[in-house]
Structure formats: C-alpha cells, structure tokens
Image (cartoon, rainbow, N blue to C red; front, side, top):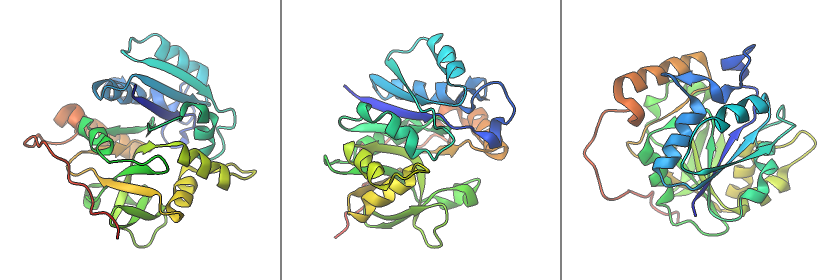
Length: 256
C-alpha cells in the first residue's frame, strides 16, 4: 500500500483572504488546487491519503466527500492551524507508520516529480525531499524555500539562506523519523516543517533527489496563481513542454 499525507490546514491569507472557502479549494484552470494534487496521486498509484484540515475544514471535507477518487481519504484535524505547519503534520503522526509522501495542498507538480522522489532508496531513519536546481525558473524566488546541499545530503533549509544550491519543491517522502524530529523541536508556539527537516539534517539523515526537468509551482500568492494558470493553459498538467521520455532517474551523488 502506498500512502501520502497532504497539509491543508492553514489560513492561506495571501491568496484567499476574506473568501468563504479554504485555500486548497482555490481553483486553477477550473479545478481546486487540492483536487489537482489528488488526481496526480491517483496517477502515481497512491492508495490512501491523509489530509490535515483546520481553517474552514468542514467546507473542505464536504467538498472532497462529493468527489469520486480511486483511493481512500482520511481526515485529521489541526485546531491550532494558526501555528506553523509542523503542527499540522504532528496532528496526523499516527498516519506516518512507514514511508509516506508528504505534500502541500497549494503546490502543483508534474506527475513525474513524485516518481523521482519515490526512486530514492530511502532508509527507515531518513527522509528525502525533491529539490530543483533550475533556480532561474522560480517565479517568486524571495518566497521560495532554499536548500544547501553536500552531495545528496541536506545541510540547511530555510527561506532566508544567503547561500544555497537548490529549491524545495514541497514534495517529500518521509518516515517516522520526521515525526520524531518535529517532536524534539516543538515548543509552545508549535514548530515548522522546516525546523523538523533542519533537525533531521543536523543528524545527517535528510536527503535530496534532483527532480530534473519535472516542473512544480507553489501557488501561494496571486502572482504565483497567475503563473500556474499560464502553465496549465499552455502545457496541461505536465506544466512544461514535452520532453523525450527517459527510463532512468539521475540521483545526486551521495555525500562522502
């Protein structure tokens, strides 16, 4: 069985402030963001999806319950959705009992991206993040999460890194090690996913895989929304021009 968890609890104030629906239901080319994520997970053969809801969670659950999916959906509540997003993942920690995809409800990505992340030979005490070296393609670089690497090992991850090698695509494959890392860094104000990833990285257990030509968009602002609309209109769900199919995935050289 293949599992994925989607974080969908936040306020999304920059994109849907004042609207009567949560950010994951914001449409892009006629389909809600989260529905596009779920359809791609279906294509990837994922059987079971956990969705963490919070702000206007009932609206999101009702909307998804009306749609047919070839996989089971399970909802988890984060009533502290004003705290950083690591708190949302901890609300669903029971769902992460083995290798599990971790995704954001506002990130669109081409179908092959998740296959590249799946290709990484993950150990039980590690997690892996799909990273993008095509930094010049990012439409809002100031808002992107940056990653500094040594081989395939993540050294640092933050939006404020002055020196970095790649960008965080928001597509992870995690193990219970990430839950344990979040529990170690959690405080009264909660914890962010980046804090947990950084803690795991400090132990040498956070890995990266190059997503290559696979495309992605973090739809967090009106500008990014317009960019996503343009890519979908021009290229469809692949989000980029067609390229010759390949049968192999280039992994980042392991850190020595």
